[in-house]
Image 1 (cartoon, rainbow, N blue to C red):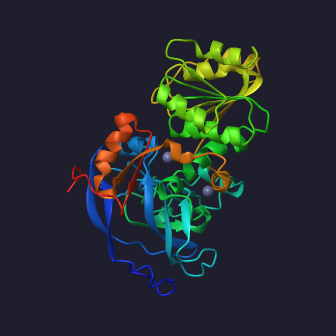
Image 2 (cartoon, helix red, strand yellow):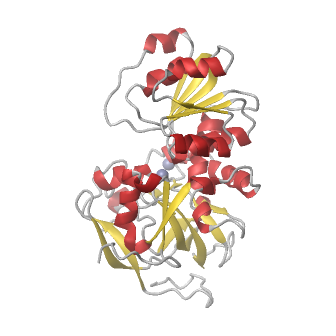
Image 3 (cartoon, rainbow, N blue to C red):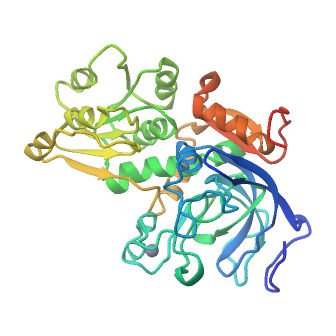
Length: 387
Ligand SMILES: [Zn+2]
Ligand SMILES: [Zn+2]
């Protein structure tokens, strides 16, 4: 690390000058190389990355580009390191930082907004109006590691102190990497949906976010929590995470099934995490009058929606963007209290050098993969990674 003078280090954590880092070449092409270890500035720390989880949005960034935005454009061939769901150990402090100590383990939120736009001032920093404005004459200080700045598929990264949530010693690295995923579930439920105890919730699509929506909803006292998917293994995990009812909708109508399970009424809140072609309509027909729908999956094509039903029934539709208003800290609090075991969604761990294989598992759901984690140390290589 080429550090400015006022950076604090500690000899317990020797920091090398360079590190292994994956960078994105052409779409879908990941290249392993050496990069300098970055140095923290004011209000920043250097994190030694101990575990990084692969998210469906990483696949969007790596194969298509957006929502990654590097120097005002597509992220390809810009020496950019993807990866955004990571945790690690604080190993160096930027000038003036006394909020964290070297050696503390932290989960890292993605978004450090610009801090000056209207949304940042409201705490909605994941909807920062200066997203990606962090280069050249456009430097507004915005950072979203793994989207607009270098991310976590490497050994060290710099994070703003606002993005850090301390985690307890007994939380494994792999679970710590899922705090930000649970933070997104929390943001959907409380900040967007205004969920209070006793309200009914359905979650459609049990990927990592959907599964943690079921877990966080139950931990917050939702009743009933109904989980909907077409894979029995994922429905079984949803039950372990706290879902009261699970419905395999491979051969039955999801709306009918949910209404039946909630006394003939729709639910108060439906969270759509599947991106199935008709899932938005399923969700809006599943909520009761005055109910709410959160759309948490990226559709790659435009879909038709029964807007007349939405209008006539006073249904609220929310998009969601990340994990704003410090929801990650509240999710970590539930995990610290062991209100649910997020580790149930972690299925595979690979060495950092085997990232392309790990991404293949996440993309193709190989061996029933749900959350796939890579670690820079402590995991044997499988020998199939890039050179
Ligand atoms: Zn993610
Ligand atoms: Zn902003």
